[in-house]
Image 1 (cartoon, rainbow, N blue to C red):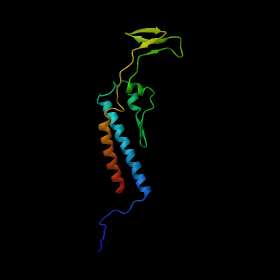
Image 2: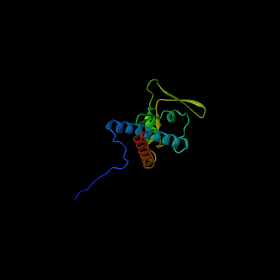
Image 3: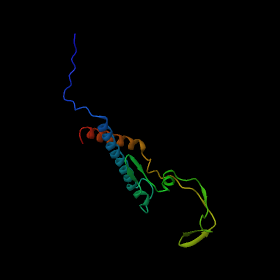
Image 4: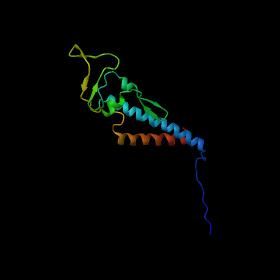
Length: 144
């Protein structure tokens, strides 16, 4: 009794370096897809009111990471509890209310509600980014 196993038209065996390179390319493409989804979400008006474009324009990719370096991004994403604001460098706070300049030694801020944009719609985004990764990975393994 004998069994013969034959391989049809299989691609040549890939080495580990080629697999790692394909993975890195696919991860970069998946990160770009996630960034685009975040920007689209903001542009569609589903997140915060985009007044200055600073936060929106700060969202970037580096390799397989999507991030922002804007320090106030977590406060927009998750909101804030009520808190007291005191001056740090001057003797008083200065701001404008109804066109009038106002000075205060402290302000009791009521907190702010969250405006999720970065982690919003995670289930949907995860599926789409996963599909993008697989599509790019397979394409790279086939030779780009």
